[in-house]
Image (tube, rainbow, N blue to C red; front, side, top):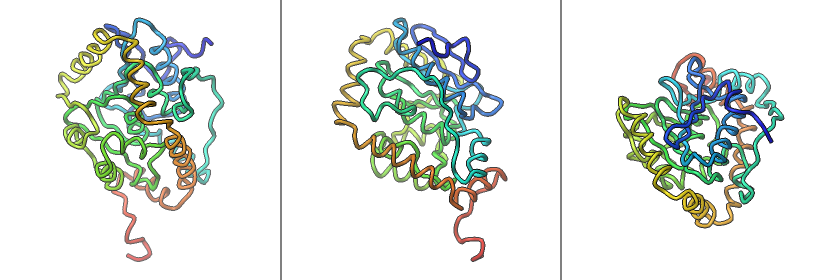
Length: 286
């Protein structure tokens, strides 16, 4: 399967340096907002890195001053105009690893099935779809002065793509509830204190520190050991993952339903108008 090669990428910049593959979300003019083309190229970039014997670790980051601010507003506007529905394009995607269980055979859970460590390097604001992307990496690191938020509660949407199941395992129950229900805007230090990111560094040295962190695993940890240990953590320790599969499917159903409800329109209008959303009291009660 030839698929989409890095030379054909339009929304991802793919490079390999010192045995570390960097997958850079590359729509800086749109603050690296997520769209269908980026989703396709992201899968192929990860597959390219995972099957390259000279790559030992993968860094996912953003071009310019942003990581990813979420789904492109055009996608959200289309969902609103279509009553919450949206068209999923039929595209040629790379295969999943042969031993990947059903729960890891989804676009968003795919990084957990790979044999190489994936580091989400939050070089700037991260929200919505970008937050989901970060949650399904093996590690998260951030610049100290950042703006990280799930954004779902403000938009009237659920924790998407099985995120609630995963986030609890990253930060614990109480911290996951705080992050999801209060929808905070976290700095890198805040996110580190809550256990969401593993390291936070000053912006001036961030990319260098991230590269050093990833290069240490790529060059000094056995590739076969890394592959087996990821299996041990995500499949052996977490069990058969059938509960993640249920959580993932149910969250997509919740998202499709809630994207057609009034709260989503209220949240989307606030985003468009660059205002703080106000749900209660309801307008008619004010």
